[in-house]
Image (cartoon, rainbow, N blue to C red; front, side):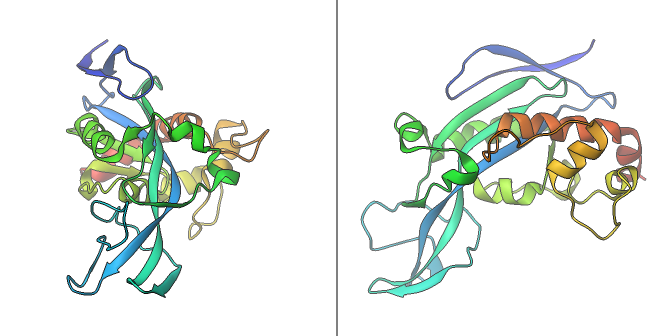
Length: 233
């Protein structure tokens, strides 16, 4: 079997692993993030989001415009989503990255009822800037699959070209295979149940980014031939 370059798992687990090539000769990974709500303020002088006169807030915006907007003595602020855990699997479904991440903005809500993230998980978490750089290195020259992947990438302040992304929430071929409405945006849980015949995000209300990334990769591989043909027609 052909294999791509070796990369180093970073974060809480470290090992040397191979990144296998897809049947089309491309390196391909799937990504999933759990996000927490963070404080992002609007700098009235700079006229941009992401800077603040409040102590403990550093760095640029993670990119997601939250819906909650209020005003304080420091100016308007909003709750924005920032990755606090990220998992990446390779083409074979092996986990090549899984790490808790300390956001670069002040945390307003851990969203524990969905993420399962606790304050203890973030005590020794990788700093946001470090995690982002490591993830960018992994994603470099890879096709990247994800479910509603724009949310994951924005929570990491990462931008990828359309040709590099495979979003399982938007691909019509999966909806057709699952016999779902062609205008729907099915959840990963529904697609996994209908097409892979198993349940995810069950047993507890928490989402597991490893499990979700693995399911995303398996869904992609169901329609890989058709999808890649359409991308390069």
